[in-house]
Amino acid sequence: MLLALAACSEKPAETANQAPEISPSSAPGFAFTYFYDFLLPNSAVAAVQEQHASACEKLGPARCRIKGLNFRVGRGQDSSASLDLLLDRDLARSFGKDGVAAVVQAGGQLSSQTITGEDLAPRLAQAARNAAEAEARIKEIEERLKQPGLGDRERTQLQEEASSLRRDKSGSKADQSDVQAQLASTPMHFTYQGIAALAISDNPFAGALEAMISSGRVMIWTVLMGLGTALPWILLLIACLLIWRLPATRRLVSLIAGNRATAND
Image: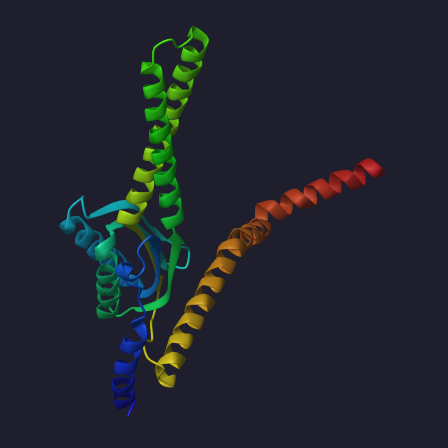
């Protein structure tokens, strides 16, 4: 019966792991950032992280780059990890879906997914307008400088204005390039949380088993921590009792007590 319940609930669980996605082509001018949080058995965290990193490396640095990687094991032996990628805009959606599928195949699940977007179209348009206006004014100044009879003071002022406009134009061009780079690439953040036992389905028996195992681990860890704290003091007390029971120690204590009594008399 337990096997039948687990089998029946397996299919809906995989469907629930497929969170909705956003296609970059449906929102031109928006720069997206993808966040995925996964729950995995402890033994699968490192392998899935490596699988995602390898998939990025196979695409090549022009289409996917690894920005950061982290892996650690906590006190309770639960492992956690993270992976930060920078993907080609057109590949982000499919790469995310494949990443979720790899987690499910390894016995894990998607716990949360967030996609944030920033509208960069106004910034890009403004930078283009600023560059065009600066270019138009520079041409006017250059035509003015070609005219005869121009005074030295006016010539100097026009040359200084032209230099300032060229700097503004360069800044606008740099801003355009920066926005275009943000639109062309998509940051993706994977977070992996390992746990001792993972119930993928809503099977109450599997959930109860997971809760029992987790509670048992916490109990064992608490007992061991308590023993680790109290054991030095217990050993010290045992040592004192053993020393007290030695005949030589008793004779020494009796001798000291007798000497104090004689001194008092």
